[in-house]
Image (cartoon, rainbow, N blue to C red; front, top):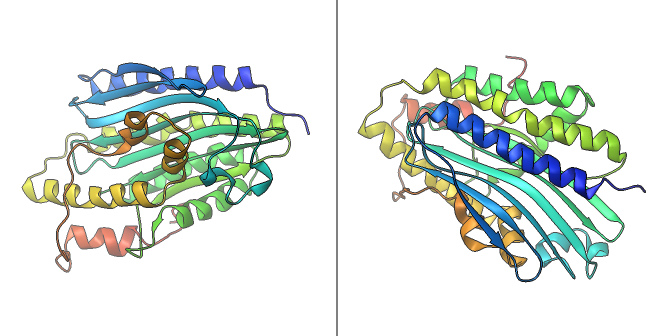
Length: 298
């Protein structure tokens, strides 16, 4: 089976990282990304870009990495034992953004490519993690991603939306991390079709998120909203450290720890057995937004 061109994939990812950083700096208005180039002794390296204490973003990062080696780590071969012991190349761009304002949701995306021997696949997706739910924001985010999917295959969005709902679920809490988006992995087949889709999905990120920032950036908030934001960030930390495949792959493959854990927020809190007040906006997040929903038809 023909494989995608590695040089083409790398060129797209580097340019994509540049476009995303430029768009985020423009809307932030104050913060600038600091780049930290790094290398991996076993092969490869990357460009970590972090923004902190900006006008919108308390902390965020947009990272490119490309690594290679003699064999994949266990997290990558557990479900694909035929890849064990094969030389590999993996590359991708990942992003997590934690805004100051609790009314602006945290957002995450990751678009990646991996090949081992003659086996190759694309992975990726984007998901939205609000602290205070707004149906207009969830609808916009999902509709933008659906449009990108539908250009290439009408089955992509419903399949990848359901996959995202399953993947970003915190099992030990029995709750979703947020309102989802799309997620896919091990996507292989017609390399030209899949490369085009993968790039389309990645390029949908800025249009899916920036309008939400514009809607919410001037909403006033107080100590109550800030405390709830810090509490809910704890769920983000729990998912990333317990379940996230990218975190496990990075750590097990000898990636750069500072870059891998860039996704964790600067400030977070845990409260013992906290429960939202019935009828409150905080309770509405649990009751109306975290359960999996059809965000397109409403």
